[in-house]
Length: 116
Length: 112
Image (cartoon, rainbow over all chains, first blue to last red; front, top):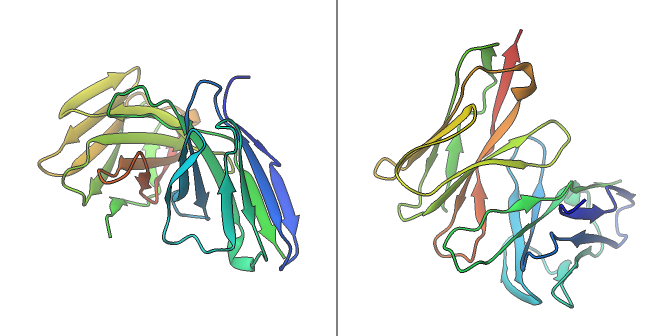
């Protein structure tokens, strides 16, 4: 399977706990994105990496959220002190920066987070 | 706040008919437009991308773009029950390195 993979697929946690999600992009893709989706809404951008550099972060992203892509390959998204409002599907996408203006993004299966 | 607007539906379409989905966007200088299909409980799947005014066809799907009217649409010909899903319109923001702005999606229900 050469698509985007995410782990875990489901996470149930208690309010106040920390959680970490992992994303492995398509192997030749150098751009990696994190989105969050709640029921009835489209995905909402969280942050973006080109190789290991985090180039953009949503203003909506509180300081409880942090993301890394240490070697320009896989990425992790950590949420500290989870709140019930963090319950959502967390989606990772990757794309190839080929120098062309347009970059198609391909999504992984997502991690569904439930905060009790 | 840049916006992408879609009718939420549900859009009910008889099997074999054409489904027509519409999307408007507020960022006048957007360059890249995408349609994703999302089945319930699954992640979005890219089905079409379009960058130039006019029509782009891929199998039973046709995307149409009119930048002057800030309007992009998706036609699904010969609709099948397997096309029942939510269709998300996405626009790449011009002041971003690839961030997509999504609409809330249109739910399509194809009835046998």
